View 1 (spheres, rainbow, N blue to C red):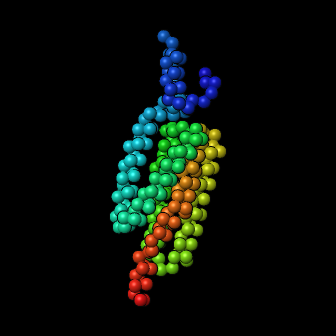
View 2: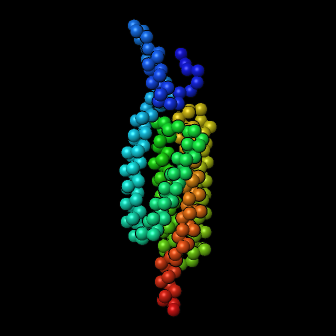
View 3: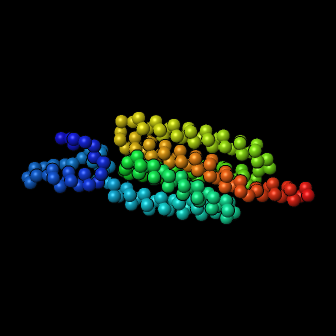
Length: 204
């Protein structure tokens, strides 16, 4: 037998497990949608645990890499904005977490860190801001759009789990790009790169 509609929530799988079984009738409840709904509490726990561990690792790595409190704070705020906007968008679009799309948070966090590292390191070492920053923004933008189209193509998959994963990753990558271009760069523009400051002091 099949359900009248798709299984989405853990409460629905519990209701099936409670209402369908009959005494003396062997029955096995199975199916991809049922498994995804049944494992929602476990996936939520894994999301919190593994994402927290990954965030701690990334934050520590960035602190060692940048060695500049201001740049470190800019990067952390950028990541928080990207992930927070992703969660808000998924809530507004009524996209529920399942066994696969919880992976999107780790993927988006890793991609957001990469975009920030490329941008911040160039900013730290540049001698020509306009030339070097344009040179790094174009690859970051193209990489983001390529990843966006790649994960977005999963939205066309017939498997609901892959569809959810593709949509969640696309949303997260979009917000990571927005945060990097429209927050990270303006925030770093509030103070001058060390290289330029050193050159000006030397020339004077």
